[in-house]
Image 1 (tube, rainbow, N blue to C red):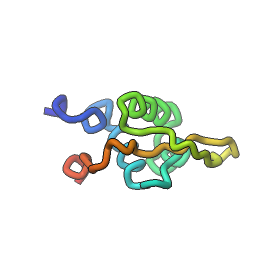
Image 2: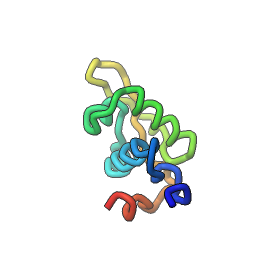
Image 3: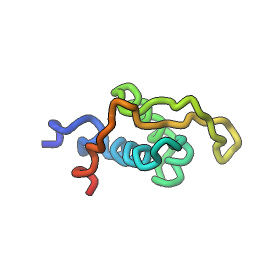
Length: 95
């Protein structure tokens, strides 16, 4: 029952959330920008931005305070997994 899984791991419309969370998790302390995720995951800006907002609101990711340039030279937020999420609950879901 996917409804019983934590937020980013539910199937359906949140599949992009799981992919985005996995990429941020895998990036460790370096984190990821939305622009980097758009390129690596082949997702439109609106999807990445929306899912990052959802993940942030649910407490799965936070703004690291760092900024990196986008492909167009703008400063972008670098997202990291929150310190409260110390284990990798996605291991079983994404394997």
